[in-house]
Amino acid sequence: MRRPLPWRYRLLLAVLAGLVAAAASHGRWLGPLDDAVFDRYTSRWTYPPDPSLLIIAIDEASLRQIGPWPWPRSVHARLLDRLTDAGSGRVLLDLPFSGPDRHPGADAQLAAAIARNGQVVLPVLTAPARADRLAEERLPIARVTASAAALGHAEIQLEADGVARGMFLHAGTGSAHWPALGLALADPSARVQGLPTAEDHPAPGQWVRDGYLRLRYAGPPGSVPQVAYVDVLEGRVAPARLHGQRVVVGPTAPGLAPPLLTPTRRDAPMSSTEYHANVASMLLQSRTLRVMAPIAQHALGVLLVMLCVSGLCGGRAATMLAIGVGLPLPLLLSWSLLRGANLWWAPCATLVTALIATALWAVWRIASGRRGADVDTVTGLANRPRFELALQQETCVADRDCRPLSLVRVELDHGSGHEDRPGLQPGAPLPMAVARLIAAHARRPRDTAARLGHVGFAMILPDTPPGGARQVVEDLIADVRRLPWVDAAGTARTTVSIGVYCRVPGPEVPADAFLSGAEAALRQAKANGGDGYVLEAG
Image (spheres, rainbow, N blue to C red):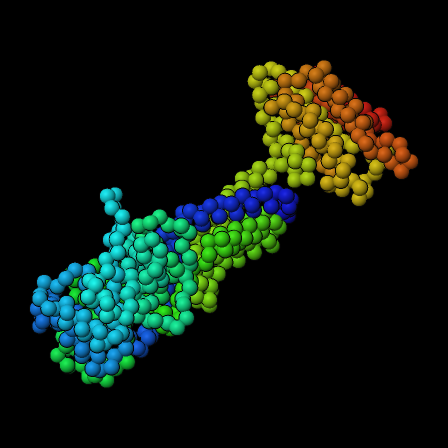
C-alpha cells in the first residue's frame, strides 16, 4: 500500500505549486484561456433587455431615404423634437459633435432642440496618446454641450482578440471624471462599483480609467428593440411607442461605425450603439459582473492548488479526492461565483497549475513504481528478483574476465535476546539498522545489497578475492556489535551470522553454486554458535 509523503515534504511541494499559481495569476499568463472560459459561461447566459430601452437606428433604409452620411444636424434636431413631443425619457445621441456643422444654422437648431428636450446625453470622444502628443478629450462643441443633460465617455474596451468583454464605468484625462455613456443613460440612483484602477497618481494628460466591470449582454446583436431613424423622423412610429423610453440614437448600418465582437456571437458583430444600450440594460437591471480583486484572486488560486497538491502527495483516498474533486473544482467554482454572485474569478492559472502538478505526480509515481518493482519497500535494499538477476549478471562478467566473485549471506542471530517477535517485524528498528549497515558496506558501484527474508540479507561483491571478502564481513560484524540494542537484562545482544562463498565462476561454478555455497557456509556459522562467519573459498 502506498504511503503518503511526510507532511514537511507535502507542505514544501504545496507551497512551491502555490507560488507558481500565484505568478501565473498575477502575470495573466493564461489570459486567453480565461477569456475563452468566460465566453463559454456567458455566451448563452442571456436575459430580456430592460423594457425601457429603445434604439433608433441609423440603418440602411434611413440612409437611402434621408440621404448620404453625414446628415445636417438640423435633421437630428427634428428627431429630438419628435421625441420631446412623445414624452421620451433620456436620449443618448451616439454621434460625433466635436466640430461645427458645415450647414449654416444647423448647430443652433440642434442646440435649441437639445435644450427643449432637457434629457440628452452626448458622447465625449477620446484621442489616444501618441509619441508626439498626449491623450485628448474631444467634447461636443460648446453650443451643443451647453444644453446637454450629461456627457459620457464613448470608449469601448476591447481585449487583445478584439472582443468587448468588459468596460470602465468612468474615464477621463488626468482623472476618471466622465461616466460611461451607458451609465449616463441609465442614470441609476446608486453609484455602481467596479474594480478600481491600479494607478493611484496618474500623470497629467494621461487617459485614466476606473471601475472595471465584465459585461453581461442581454443577448446577441438585435436583442434590444430597434426602430428605423427615418420612421421616427417621418412620424411612422406611434408616440406611445416612444413615451417614457430611454432612447439610444446611433448608426447601425455597416460602414458607419466599426463593428464589435461580443461573447454572444462571433459571426454577428454588434454596433457601438447597441453596445451602449446593452451597458445601460445591464446597469438598470443590476446584472453587472464584478471582477474579483487581484489579491483575493491570487489567494483563492493558491489555496486550491495547495490543497490539490497536498492531496496528491497523501494516501490513496486523498489522491483520488484531489484528482476527482480538486481538478474540476476551479472551473466549477468559477461558474458558481459567476452565476450565483455575479463575480468573475479567472480559473485557468489554478486549473493548469493543478493539471501540471498532477501530470508530474503521475510521472513520478510511474517512475517510482518501476524503481520499486525491484526494491524492498521496507529497507530500500534490492529484493530477491533483483538480487537473482544481479547474481546472474555478475557471474557471467566474472566468468568472462576470470575474476573472483564473493557472495555474502547475512542473518540476524535468533536465541540471543531478540527472537522473532513483534519487535522484529518488517520496519522494526533493529533489522532496519542492520540493513543500513549492509548497504554501507556494499558501497562500490557494482556491489549489490539485498534483503532475502525476514531477517536475512545478502551482498554480491564483484571482483573481490577471499581476503577482501573477509575484511568486509569482519568490519560488518564489528559495526553490528556496536548497535545500541539491549535486551531486558541490559546486555548488548546484537549479533549476526555470515556465510561467504568466493570463487572464480566457470562452467563448474554457476550462479546457483554461489547461492547454495553461501547458504551452506551460513548454516555452518550458525551451527558454530553465531556471532561470526564462515568463508568458503576455492
